[in-house]
Length: 182
Image (tube, rainbow, N blue to C red; front, side):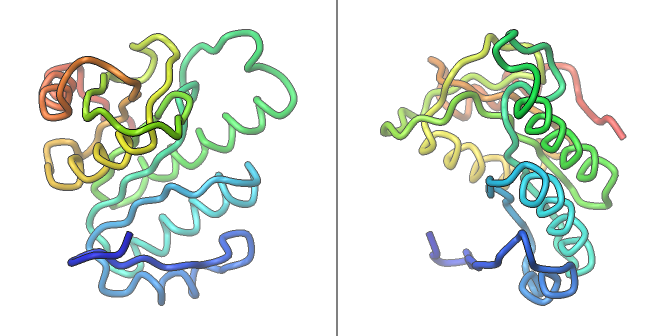
């Protein structure tokens, strides 16, 4: 998805160190971390390395995509074994970002769908929405929208399909309680 003002990079997050990632991120104003894979090596350690590298490289904004279920109650089928490791790794990456010097936004999408986006979502602070689903397209549109609006900095929002136009959903979420956990 490279375009005007957008640069993409490929790195093996399971093996790249912070110095290598810092070099890749030099000159970048904003970073979007949407990688997923091994919960420990990618979702936790990879994210934490990219966060540190973003700070070192002088990035200003950071959007972290984790998952609905982080920092909230989960249905019984999402407890134990893999799920505790998965959500624990995502929570550690969120905590690392919150304690960074970056201007951050955390998006916690429900189940990711490979369906066309509708441009209509619900955004709300962690734990506020019923567990749901959202298209990858709508998550991407939301990432672009939060990067364009500094008022979204310091917010952690769940995101699912909804009936509100994206701009309206952001305005509504901005009116909700501020999440500036440190």
